[in-house]
Image 1: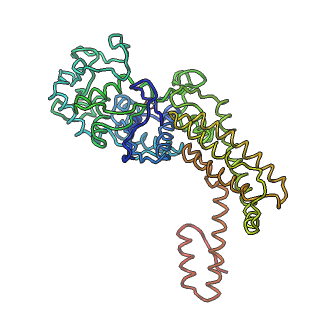
Image 2: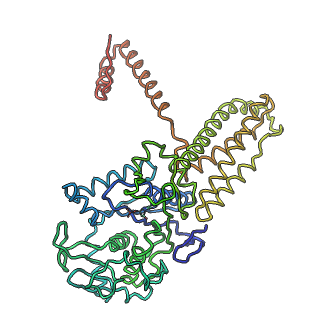
Length: 479
Ligand code: AMP
């Protein structure tokens, strides 16, 4: 499989030792000071798909996403609302997880909070000081970028021409490029440390967390494009200086940015869309399909028109699945007769190879750096084949249908299952109305069973069932 590695600026073969099927994946998580927006959704849906595909091809992926729960933005927002910053962070973390669940992003194994890893942060800062990579000033502890010979190797940018707004100018630093590991402050919230009261720098929380759970080296690190510099370059400088081992990460993966109607999302432009806003208007699965209709590295433009297109595609997939289920039920009856009578020598309308070819094409696209738009195009085009084959079968007489016709639809169903296990757009979800129908049928069975129990004078058991139903606020009256 090929994966585009930001470090190498090219697609590379994804290599693991043949006996090692475990992958450690870390993706930068949110700063929890507000509701997540659809740009967050884009990045996290992409990594959810990436994990799903890696598992589909046989790997076991341990996926960690940190929660930045201490940050100036959190503190500022808490002040505005007159609440405790940690309460604000917990509130938005909970809402973030609810939003992710709605988008079917549920593959993250662990969401470690920065503030729960203060000891790991202290240890890393101390090692950096001991090894001569960090120095203390009156304002904090800073990483001395000049000491790390490859500083900036991920972004590969000319560090002499850094955008000034990206760097925190502080006169106590030896070099403007040096970044904070510890920021001294006596303003609450702060943590006590041997360097005085303060708060951790942004970059150190990630390496403290990944070293704790993965050690100094691991497989994949992901995030949005905006994080390459300074965040990910700083992480590399920290971790490789601490461990003396490189590379810290084998594959660096970055998602492209999401814009709205061609422009960057921002509150002042009034085009800022939270995931909650989105799902009031759109099916979250249509949004998922919209995201995966563009390659994860490309920029993506959100517009009503593109969401409408994604909704149409979702309907087409659902409709095809319904048609498939229907024809399989119908053919099941026929094929049992066909098999019994050994009438397999009839010519099938369906070519079983077509399913294999579609599957091969689908996998080939996914193996090419998770090319979901092409993989989706393969599946959408195959739905046309399925539907036209269903039409032909419906036009055939019963005795003209053979076992290969049945096999074609069964294999097609399996292909859609595979597709859904990677795109995860709820194709095989039982519809809500069906679930409700089933529950009323179930209730009828219980009521009839009670009636029979009462007729046979087994009052104890029938009362027990009634009491249990009452506990569920289901009232049953005996006449
Ligand atoms: P933040 O909460 O801003 O630190 O972002 C958390 C993750 O979401 C990071 O990986 C960001 O790169 C990503 N992200 C933020 N905004 C967008 C956007 N508009 N499009 C895609 N990814 C984004």
